[in-house]
Image (cartoon, rainbow, N blue to C red; front, top):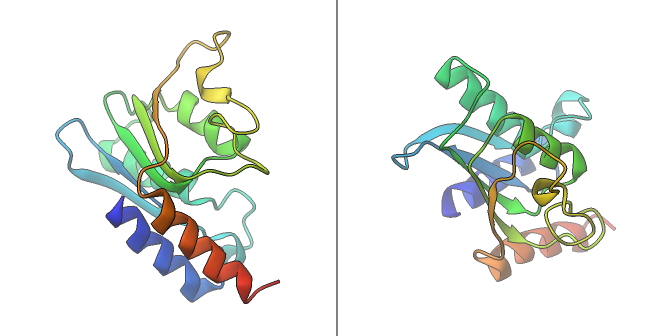
Length: 143
């Protein structure tokens, strides 16, 4: 999670919400990194999770990320939860909960929907206070 927090800090340079993510392979090696790029690129899909998943897929040379873990500082939204399922990630670890848009247990639970063909393990609340503090600090100066 500390690597994801470092990625969150990188989002600030582009004026983006500080959310960071990393993808680890089955051995624990980092194969993908990402932070929010929506403001910097004007891309609505530029969420940290999608950026990290794309990076991991490029690193692996395939879209299937079986056996891999996504670690992200904020609970993924519905778009990112869909990307998690479609990329076949084995596990998603997140820090802060997102009561307004969270799709990994808070508002929706997309990744554990029994109607889908893949359901990753979910590990919530890792370094929750640190992850939440980064967002609270950011929004205290932006609202």
